Length: 317
Ligand SMILES: NC(=O)c1ccc[n+]([C@@H]2O[C@H](COP(=O)([O-])OP(=O)(O)OC[C@H]3O[C@@H](n4cnc5c(N)ncnc54)[C@H](OP(=O)(O)O)[C@@H]3O)[C@@H](O)[C@H]2O)c1
Image 1 (cartoon, helix red, strand yellow):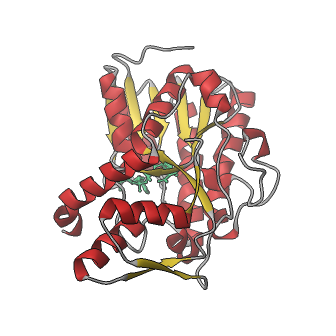
Image 2: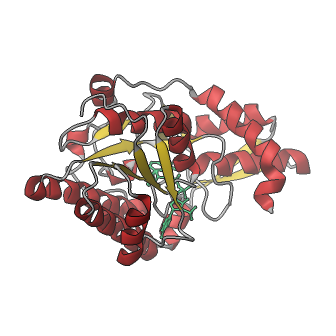
């Protein structure tokens, strides 16, 4: 189904009410598809009968699996068991039931946390199995990596068409700003805004600031994923990245400039850095999807900070 036209098709999106899921739904609707959003309040996807009910009710042609239990280093460290269980079990049931329901194609949203801790940078898809992931996010990353194994096994045994796309760290408007569960960008934005408003001249951040990450704007990721549903074929996973590796200390300076925080950062090295370096090789996505990101880090941070400032009251309530 190379270049499939999604117009008029029914596409079930698990996690379709989440940060990334909402943007996927927008991209599908722009293409004239009928997106069916699955919410956890209606369908707890850790329960196989609720997965069956979701598929039965949706009567979908295609499925995008974006539901997951996610969080930053702190949440991953605190909840390794529940992160492993929920992500493994949701995916296992979903792939199995989607195959049984005769879904034409399933796209699974992977995670850069599945890569080995010391994979050569930039991470190539073929390096996924060259070592164990960084310890704090290994239960989450490995649970999600098992879905790649299951997808390949169901393709081999049953001919079930599914593809795995692996976005790097995401950011953008609509992100999670809760200190207990947020990722690094919303956490630093919130700390800087609150420090500026309180007149504090120091913000304490986790780790050494030396770890690097690659950040992808959420709308760019959503577009790459929908192109993946349209165009990808075969068993090999595909990375989505922005080709810009940045140290957390440099990121913090950019966020300070964007939020107007003029104080200094203190680094709490007793807290983990997470994976030492992270950046993906995006050449497969360029070649197979004709995709490349449009929104750079500075522009994306400006949009994210603006969104946070406009929506703070609502987020709190
Ligand atoms: N954020 C990142 O930096 C990043 C990077 C790479 C990959 N990803 C992947 O991108 C996908 C979306 O992540 P996100 O950042 O958008 O997270 P998110 O905002 O937390 O969205 C995930 C959604 O999963 C749903 N969900 C969780 N448990 C569920 C359950 N038991 N049953 C049904 N639905 C459940 C939730 O739906 P409700 O809202 O209905 O409760 C939630 O909205 C995930 O697969 C994640 O692994 C994220």
